[in-house]
Length: 130
Image (cartoon, rainbow, N blue to C red; front, side, top):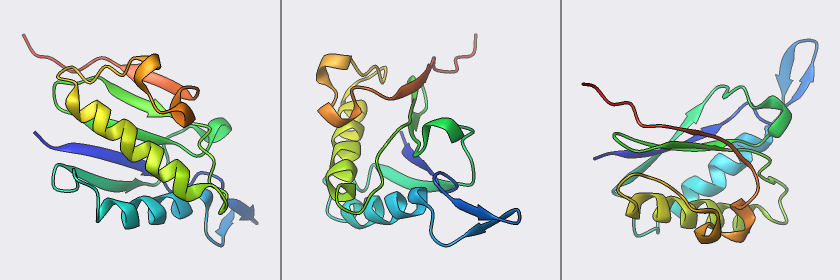
């Protein structure tokens, strides 16, 4: 069953005259996650995909975990500053590993990495068909 980490690339953008300027915080996070993903034990089970916007603009940066038959999680308020982005990226992958290990995708607060305990914007139930 494929698992996906979506990363909002519009998050923490600088805008001028209605156009995005430079590299957004979301793009920085995506780049770091992609680098660390290469050596991650679940790299063959998870893909990382950019998303133009996840409508979490007041809680940037945003990522989500998605898999068929599992709850979908959306996390926001993820720091993207250069000094902490490696640690944050590691926490995202650690939390994704936990998500992968759960048959229903439920991520108990007490088991999440410290850096992702706060910041859940949504938990969407799995789509099921009768």
